[in-house]
Length: 356
Image (cartoon, rainbow, N blue to C red; front, side, top):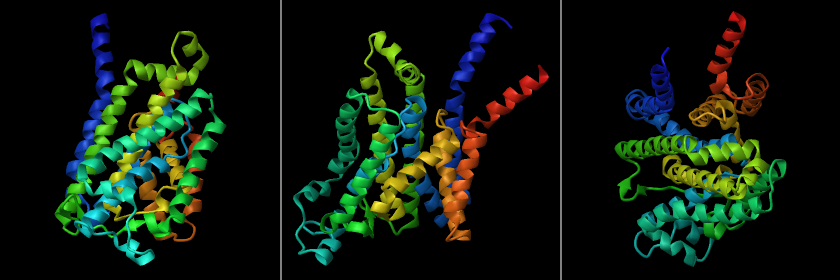
């Protein structure tokens, strides 16, 4: 094989993930709407929202070595921001959400008012989690908190956030959360055509996040992130600040989780503390581990698989489904520690070893 042929093969392999993303786009945007019922398509839409958050976890954990177990916080920030806008949209000009009349005296907190604006809501979905992640990340990474301490700290954030939501029933709906959305930026959510439109937006957002992750993985930043994961002190010795590198990955993961949460609210028709608590965050981590945290498509496919597994097992075994799902995760971690997505590579390596 000539050197020119080797270079060409290397370039083709470099674009293989982009081809895989394109195939996934065809499956999600063309095949799924044509073959699935409205109920199943809506369920798939929820799984895609989790997959968007999982892509960010793959960046932070798979490439950066940061076990972020509190992504439910950022998922919730985006979800509640969108839900607040949808509730105000349904209430009409000058109106207040129905639960504030039911649980309180009908007065609306001042921080709700800006969410009447669609552009403000869209900006908040991106900027609010970015600001929170920047502040938290700066405090965490500058103090060199990592490993199990980082994981416990982020999980504690999810617990505190969910507890705060439950306690503020007059402001956020409490344990019941925000629900009964009738419109999505003027589109009637009871219309199947509009439901499919929101699903398509979620599918497009997932594809966009995968492309962003692919670009980051192959960039100089991606190389520095992996180097920081594997040899942080060497990166610091070379003149780079590992805290800043990890902070960028943490913020990007937070924004992706927020986008997933924002789309989850209109698709699921509800956003509640149970969607953003520590358990929800652990399910996201489990999906990433199942698919393969260091792979590009692995986290997304793992999250979708976990979503389908939760739905199927809960339908077949309403009281025992969590045990079956937990057993599956244990088996995957024991037999395929790099995730199911790494199975083809493991098989190829085994065949090479046998032939040698």
